[in-house]
Amino acid sequence: RPMAMTLGHVILGRTAAALDIAHAHELIHVRQYERWGPLFVPAYLLCSLVLWLRGKDAYHENPFERQAYGSDNPLH
Image 1 (tube, rainbow, N blue to C red):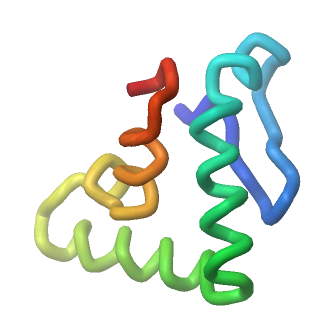
Image 2 (image 1 turned 135 degrees about the vertical axis):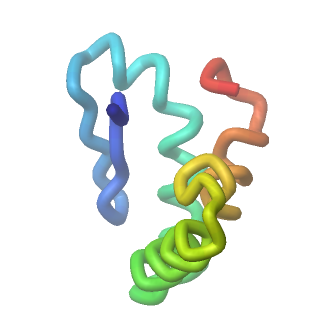
């Protein structure tokens, strides 16, 4: 289950502690949203769908998640 998620410039967390842990990761998604604009969510979902159809991990192999996990943060 995700600890936090980003909707545009808003980061939502299950708890304050979860927000502290996931903050750096979620900030990468905020930057992705700024770069991709309204195409971010469709692009993210399309990547996940293609990965899922290929039998791969639709979350961890999603390039948007790989970029966020690849940043220097405690979730990686």
